[in-house]
Length: 249
Image 1 (cartoon, rainbow, N blue to C red):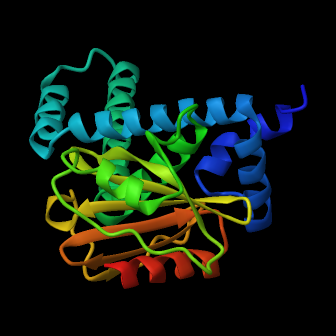
Image 2 (cartoon, rainbow, N blue to C red):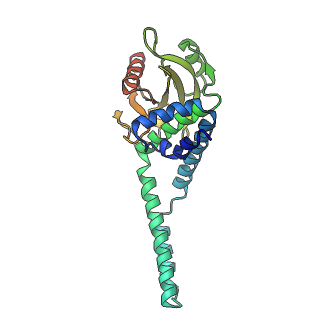
């Protein structure tokens, strides 16, 4: 199949572990290939489900201690059997510790950035990326009234290279927000807006995205709202759109 080489590297692409040039080529292919975009959407959804389940069922220190005590209390039938049980217990404890450590590093800021990237990919891979389709900001902005618990302004795009495609409601965990999609030179850029105080992690006044993120991202806090501008467009384009939003707010 034509897409076999792309599919084989899809997980690596979604984890941001391919070179920058290949990342952009991959992004262009995923946007134009219905099969790969659907596959990417499925994998992103599975990734988010695993993250949510991992946070819910992470074993506590008390649970691990009880398991150690129970294993230590059982009589050893033989040296070989005892060694096997000890090895199995060690594997369980190591896996549990590594899982907890991994989930811990994915919490807070990194977790928020990862979920923002997942929302961006999942939306663009879907068949209906926006719920309100319009290039007119005066049509898109009123659409959000009554759907989200805050108001925000959209920038004037006249004399710029950007065009508005539309918007949709979105959620960052349980926090409702707005998702706008813009185009610039055949690249799609997502702009997310949430209430700062309701986010699952405090990002600070200005926060840098992790370098391993497979997209360029800029985020800031303004007027009690948290803005995220993310996409595979150039850093200059991401910065330009962010400046337009800062001016509009």
